[in-house]
Length: 197
Image (cartoon, rainbow, N blue to C red; front, side, top):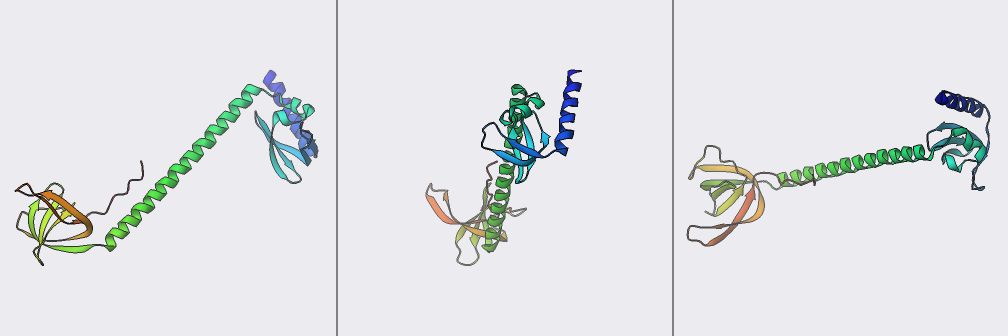
């Protein structure tokens, strides 16, 4: 029954508040909303439409006679504000994740384009197939190179191959004599940009 009388009082207040447009002076005595109407409310605040726009005002800041009409409950107001802040924080976090994801996608797309622009044809015979890629002895110059991420398919050592790959610096390996060798490297797969996920 108490809730019913509360809602009836609020309904009566709003029906008269919508018809009347008065000045509302807040408890600080400095802030005055001219030609003001309360158009919405929650447990913590009211929304006031006034001659200069719309304002949100916390219920404790209202003048006492107006504040009394809202049966203000500090605990309910604090909970409403905390819920509102949590929702706002969740929206901001979702926007940050979306922006980071978008930036990551853009960076990946740029890396893919750069990789495609730098592709060359590596042609020669397979010298050795490893789990990381393929050693190829070039047809021109008889130079040994390493192509990362190359998929040899059904090819075996000595088969002639021609693959598209991008220059990717150098590759070090240890030969059968235990010596460290450094040769030119290529990569047949675009680089992966870690978006931080």
